[in-house]
Length: 139
Image (cartoon, rainbow, N blue to C red; front, side, top):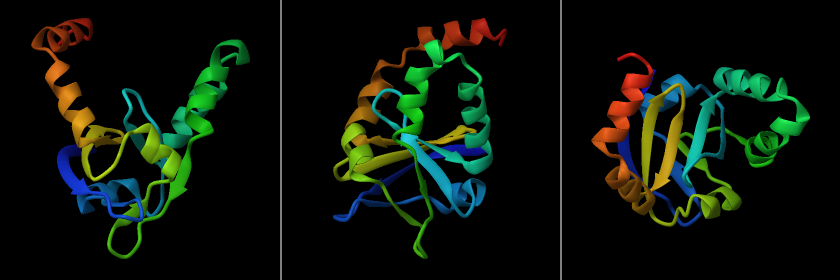
């Protein structure tokens, strides 16, 4: 299970260190794609295949936007010997990644955020919103 919160810098070449704890669960290679709220989603290959199948089963009339959003921006990456991955420039631009990044584990995937976007998103996450979501799932 992918859990935790880490801060790392992006180097001049667009590389970022994926924490060792996450690399163990993500595997030798994994998928990076656009996520929600200007973040990047990082999936282990087995989780990516589950997501891919769910999206492919949607009728084209309703699934095409999801297909375009996730698949056209997806890249399979393999960490180097230092645990760094190269984030493609189109994904860095989408996520507004410049220097500081926040890498979080959210159960079955990892998310990569710019520090600024993470801070803004965290500030907007209200106790009421969390309470409502917990009520929806009967927690």
